[in-house]
Amino acid sequence: MNNMTNDFTPLKKLDLELPPIGVKFSFFKPDDVPPLEKDAKLSLCEMLKTAQAENRSFYFSKENDETCVGNILLGMDSFAGFEESGQIGPRLGVFDEARCNQHFYQFVPKLNKGIVNYVLFSPVEKLTYEPDVLVVAASPEKAEIVMRAMTYTTGEMYKSTCTPVMGCAWLLIHPYKTAEVNFLVPALVHGMHGRRLYSPDTLLIGIPYRWIPTILANLERMPLHLEGHKSKEAYYEEFGGIIADLSEKAKNP
Image 1 (cartoon, rainbow, N blue to C red):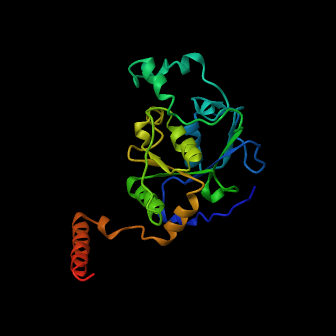
Image 2 (tube, helix red, strand yellow):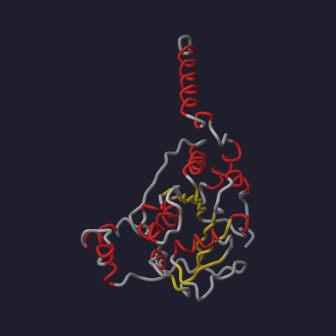
């Protein structure tokens, strides 16, 4: 592919423990990204973590054995009757009855059947394509910087939308379909929690392609570490000083 237009180097400033991953949904087979091993048995969220932990690029297709519901959310397969009727959630203890499990399906974002045949994962330093969604895993302190880079020049509000299961849909598909940056806490999602994919204080941020240039540009230009975040005392001193100064100047606007 090699159709790169964004410069992802500002992300290096964050010194993240896990590399940000560029995800792309493709109808056609990529010619410069290797396939995930045929014998790999991973859920969609485990594929993301594999790309992060092993710092490598690969693509997944319906030929791979996806072990959860990722292939269904991607439109590569369909729910079995017992799944769609909500029988699994109550057995997991996530829902009281099947009706509750069935009810939440209306909210979960999915891709239409047949439009995605391949899903590409790549650490940003190895990208050969412009991602549809950029995924950042970070501590709350560093996630704050990424989210602030979204609002710094736009005033856009923060949003976190998720359900207790199928968190991968909210991290990957929701940003892609809505063009909204979304963040979630993997410890609150049943599968991510049970698989112990991330430390309990990790936040995952899904950034759709429309927002990637803005966030990268603002990471380059804005102050990353704020004076008011150094300590409680520093916060009150700075904030109080600003209010006092503006109050004085406002007497003669």
